[in-house]
Length: 208
Image 1 (cartoon, rainbow, N blue to C red):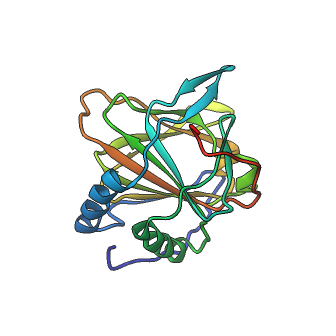
Image 2 (cartoon, rainbow, N blue to C red):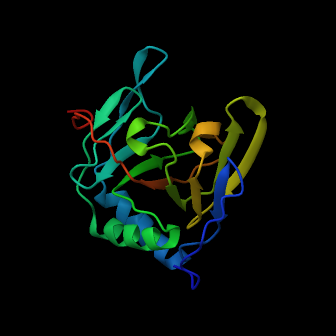
């Protein structure tokens, strides 16, 4: 991590977003990326979209404390146990963001065709104003933000290797976000979104 390892977030409005390029040093990001490629039990999660079950266009893994159950897109997830490298990273992020995290969603985008559609992270388990710390590793990709009631009002971030993006306040209530397809991208990207799940639900492991 760079020398400035912590920050105080100033909530300047409903779209409370902080982008910190290079928050994780390149050598640290390189080591973490390679470890996650091989150590994470990646799966193709089944999600419910437009009334039917489909394979998500990316690989994923839900990891965290034993009681950090989570419901997303019609499916209930039980977390895989923490990897030591992610336990350490969690501590660093909690200090940096002045927030607590008991889980992390890992998404692996294998090429420019893998994507994440427009959505909010507004599930009840996350609370009314969740703090979500998103760390990017690997190939640079576009991250889009738009108002839920005015789609023409958009913001774009180019998230690169070791970049940290933090969303909090009313961001999930008022805004949607997406990671679109990106032509010409061949390299892989892993995204880690740390969050606090506060209301467990009855759950099962995805795909089992």
